[in-house]
Image 1 (cartoon, each protein chain N blue to C red):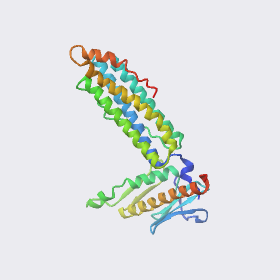
Image 2: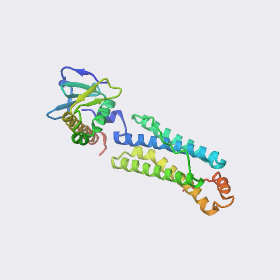
Image 3: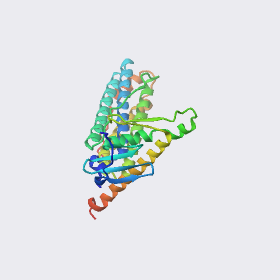
Image 4: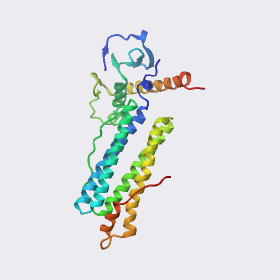
Amino acid sequence: MVTTLTTPQTNTWADVFATAKGAVYQSDADRCWYVDFAGKVAKFDYRCLLKLKKAVYNVNIEAKLLNVKDPDVEIIFICACDHTYILTLLQIIALKELLEGTFVMLQLNSILQDRLYRIAV
Amino acid sequence: MKDLIRIRSLISADVESLLNQQVKKEATSSSIYLAMASWCNRNGFDYSSEYFFKQAEEERQHQLKFYKYILDMGGNAISPDVTGIKQEYNSFREVFEDALDQEVSVTQSIKNIYARCLSEQDYVTNEFLNWFLKEQREEEYKARRALELFEVIGEEGTGNWEIDKHVGKIKYDSEA
C-alpha cells in the first residue's frame, strides 16, 4: 500500500536514514515505512519497499550516463502499489543512495535487536 | 524501532531471491525431462521414456517444496516462466549427457544457496536444504549410472535396446 501524505507525522515515526535529498521513516504502529523523496511522502509496506528497492537498483545508471540520446526520465512503476515515481537520472542516483542507506540501517537494527533482546548470552 | 523486516519474513530478501531462482531451475528441469521423455518415446526407447516421466514428476515435486517453503517463511513465491526447452536430440546418448549436465547444474545451484545461507547464519534454510543435498546424491548417481551403461554395454548392434532396458532398472539404495 502506498499513500501520499501532505505532512510527515515525524512525532510517531523513527528516523531510519536521511540524506540531503530525502529521508525514510519507520512507523512501528502502522508497520510500514514513509519515504520522503521528490517532494512527497509515500507510505510503503514491507513488500512494496522491497519492490521499490529492486526497481531502483535495476536502473542501469552507467548505461544511461553514456547514452547521449537518453531522455533523462525514468519511470519507477511498482506493481501492486498505487504509486509511481517519475525521476531524472540525478534523482535516481539520490534515491538509490537513500535506499542503500535505509537497508543498511534496517539490517543494523536487526543485528542490534538480536544482540540486545533475542540472543541468549 | 521494531525490526519490521524480520517480523515479516524469516528469510532475507537475498535468500528469497535465490530460492525463487531455484524454483525456476527445478521447473526448467521438469520441462527438460518431459521433453526427453517425449523424444525417447518417439524413438522407441520406452523404458527410458518412463524413467524421464518419473524424473519430470520428481523435479516438479522439488519445485513445489521450494515454493511452499518460501511462502511458509513469509516470502513471495514467484511462479516461473519456463521457455526455450530443447525438444530434439541428436542421439540416445546425448539425452543422458544432457540429463547429467542438468543434475550437476542443480547440485551446484543448491550448494551456492547453502553457502549464502551459511554466510548469513540462516541455519533454518540450511536445514531445509539438507534434504535436497541428499536427494542430489541420488539424482547425480542415477544420471551418471545411465551414462555408464553406454560404456559397459556399448551402442553397437542391439546395444541401445539393451541400454534402454537397463535404464528402467537403475536404483539408488545407499543407506550412507
